[in-house]
Length: 328
Ligand code: SF4
Image (cartoon, rainbow, N blue to C red):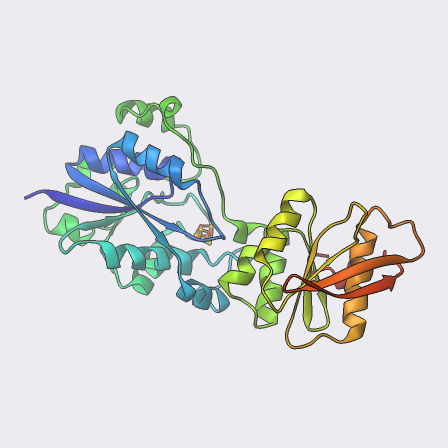
C-alpha cells in the first residue's frame, strides 16, 4: 500500500527538507499551505516549488475561525501579536481535515529552533490543541523526539529521520547535499509573518480593541497610515498605488477624502454610524497635512461617499497627528 504524508508546507527551507526526507522515506507527499493576509506567500512560486520537489500542493485559506483564535489564543502571544502555538495548532487542524485516513501528518519543525513554538513542551501543546497527540511527525528532529504513533506502528523507522536541533544552520549544506536539494534551482516564495512586526501588531490590536477584527479590515492594514478619530478609522494612502487600492476597497458607507486639483493622498474614513462633524473635519485636516497644500492656511478637502461628492470642507492642515496615530 502506498504510504502517504501530509506536510505543513510554508515553502521555507525546513519544509523543503522535510518534503525531500519524507519522499526518501517512501511517502507520497502532499504539501498543505495555509494562507492568510497575515502570512502571504506567492502562490505561483509555491506551486512551482512543489512541482520541482515532486510533491502535490494544496492551498487552504485561513477562515473566520483564525480571527476568533487570534482574539484569545489559549497559549498567548509571542513578542508581538503572534499566537505561534495556537497558530500552528490551527494549521495542523486544517491539515487534519484534508488528510486521508491512515496518512501521516508531518511538519518541518526543528526542535529548539524558535523560542516560542519549537520546544518539546510547545510541540505537546500544539498536538493537544489540534487533537493530534502523538500524531505529528517532525522528521527533521525525529531522532531526538519521543516516538510518534507512526513509529510505534512500524510505519517509519527512527534511523530514517534526522537529529537537527537549535537555530544553527551549520549542518544544512551537508544535509542539502545528502537529500540532493539544489537551492539554486528552486524558487523562494518570499514572505514572513506580519503578526511578528511591532507596528503591524499595533494596528491589529487597535482593530481588536474596537471590535473591528474581520478580514475586510485586516486587508486594509497593509495600506497607508492609520489613524483613530473617535469611532472612526482613517487610512491615508502613501503613494499612487495605495491611493488606488484604498479607493477600490472603499465600501458604500465609507468616505473617501482628497484634496482636488493638488497632489494629495486618497484617504478612507470608516465609521460606525454617522460621524460627528468634528471627526470629519479632523480627518480632512489630516489629509490636508499629507497633501502638497500642507503649507497653505486653508485647504479645501472633498468628501465623497458611494462615488458622489457630499461635502467640501475648508480646513487648516493638522500637523500634530501623533495622538490620532494607531502606530505611534
Ligand atoms: S510566526 Fe506567524 S505564521 Fe508562524 S506560527 Fe507564529 S503566528 Fe503563525
